[in-house]
Length: 113
Image (cartoon, rainbow, N blue to C red; front, side, top):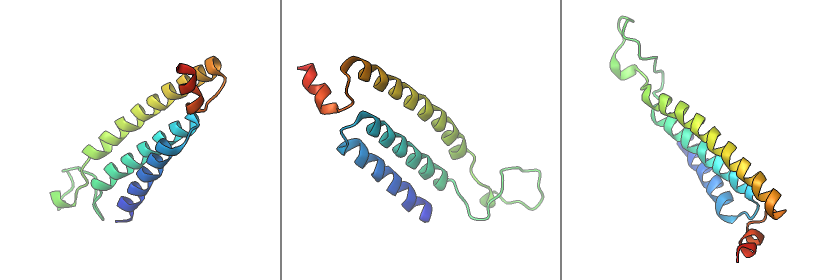
């Protein structure tokens, strides 16, 4: 239960940062926090207390005590994708700063018009 609460809290903190902050780097950090919260939520969905690895060669092991490996595989993939998205977003932030000499999103919007 604590894992669900922590995951929802991380998602809400990240969404707060994305929606309220004006600095683009803080927005990217907020997206990364949301990504971590979603990963924790996916892992906690597949969690079974006192569960074991899904190996059928062990005698006496019933399928209801095995941990589902699909959420773990999905989270591993999501971590790699999240890392790539964060790297691309930070490279865009660097390009924006080189071009506009500011990271304030309101000033960049005003320069557009």
